[in-house]
Image 1: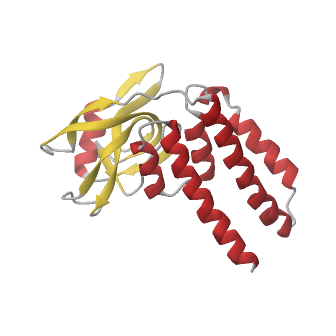
Image 2: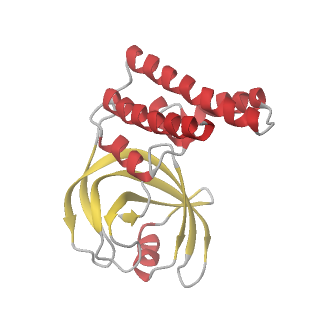
Length: 211
């Protein structure tokens, strides 16, 4: 387990710099070599209270399994990782940190969004684009080109197995607290309730800025 000061959604990207001795050992214990590629798998959980360094932190109980490429590794074990979230999990039992955080987990199901859910997501997306258009036009940006790039990202075949709700939230770069709420939501409808709250906050800030 890798407790961090940020949450990670499935499909989200996570660059990491590994320097603490316990995590250097974790990488060394679990690194896999295949076809010239070095990878390591671990779980990421958000720290509810405390620091990333030194241990003793209070951890959230829902996190994300992560597959990370080891992009650089020094002889002393320090490493650079480039991770991607894959699946949500819930902690069944925390084990002693010996020498790094360990836990038993259960992988959580990912119900597919219904047509009604997808219509809600489309409506939320249109609300975001209204705010983006206003902001980008005020800055003299080429709005249509930027929107076209977003559409390409959303259609990335590499993300075909990731829920469109996660893809949308990752594109927006939702704050860690709201990412955690998405991870803990029981179903797509609950996740969309979180995104509704996020959009209401963005709309309020945009209206205040225009006032």
